[in-house]
Length: 219
Picture 1: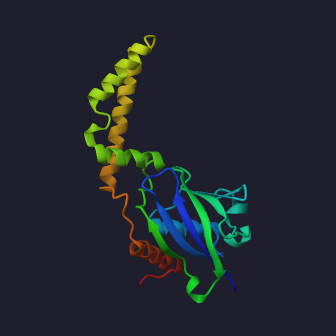
Picture 2 (picture 1 turned 90 degrees about the horizontal axis):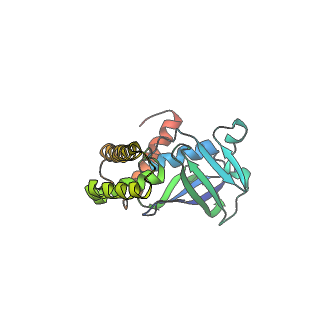
Picture 3 (picture 1 turned 135 degrees about the vertical axis):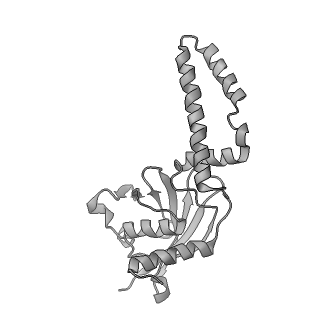
C-alpha cells in the first residue's frame, strides 16, 4: 500500500536542558502504534495512556472511537504542529512539528529515530516538576531546603500568620521532609541523572527490539 513518510520533531515542554527527538514514521501509523514507537525510543513503558490534540480536537487512549485513528487521517502539512501527551498520570507534554513529508519507500516502512538532544527523564518521576526537583536535589544536595533555611521560613510564616495553630507548621515541616525523602528515593532508583546525554544508537536499538517483539519473534 502506498504511504507517506512523516519526519517529526518532538520537543518536551517545561524541561531544561531541552529534550528533543526527531523521528520518521509512516503516515499509516495508528495513534496507539505511534505512542508505542515513541515510548520505545525514549525507553519508557508507555502504559499510562496518551492524548493527542490535533486541529483543536482531542484523541486519546480512553475513547474507543478515536484511539484507532491513523496519522494520515489528520492530513497534516509541513511545519504543522500538534500536542502529544505521553502518560496521562505524569503529563509529559510534547510539542510535535511536521518537518517533512515525502513518498514512502521500502526503507521508510520501519520507524526510526533520526536524532535528538538531552536525556530522557525517568518516566515515573512526577512529570516535569518532579524531574526538575530531582535535578535540583542532585546538583545542590543537602543545600536544597537545608533545615536551617526551612526553619527560618516557617518562623517567618508563623509570625505573619499568628492565627494559625502550631500544628499547621508541624504539618508543613513533615510535608517538606517527606518530599525530600521522596526525591532522594527516586534518585536512588534512577541512578545519577545525565540531563545532557543522548545516544542515537541506543534509541534505535530500543526501537529495533520493540519492532521485533511486535512482530512476535526474537533475534
